[in-house]
Image (cartoon, rainbow, N blue to C red; front, side):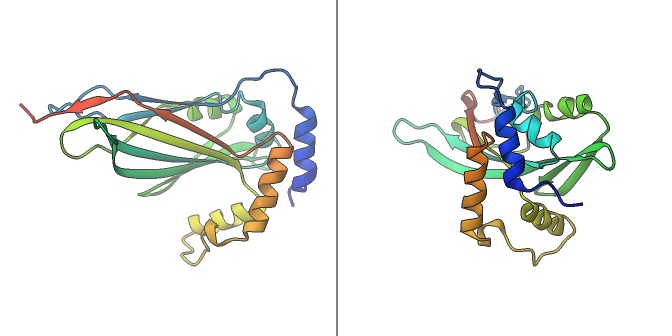
Length: 214
């Protein structure tokens, strides 16, 4: 069964959205407790209120998948210009499957995709709010911090077909960057007009110092 045409769906979401101030999704980055004698600390990343944000809650209930794309950067603090060390990326795709009466969450990690299924919305909300510890540390000594960006977007049928091919191991699936830029622009325009925009959040951790082990 084909999903409701994107334009009609988005216009419906726009009409349902109240004009008053609403809860918005947010991104929080903290430092994990120190476990290393050098003082190195990993990042804790938490997404708050994703489904309390009516834009994304309504989209999901209309079987419109949501993708969360994370990028964590490691920076060394310097007196002049801070030094970028490296970055790591991962994604999470959230889907409602009405025929199975459940929700599917697919984490796309460097080690491969990991899938979870939840039978209730409350279970899904709890899972999406769990804090993740990112397995990435700076190299060398000095003062460091983490900067995390999160892009949230609704996925079209084409996006999902490409993602399903990728998860099935189709190495010939074209990357998103090679798809029609006109098609992406039209979809993003419709999302913004309907009040369900492509959203980018950014958060930074506190600084921490890494020294020589004692």
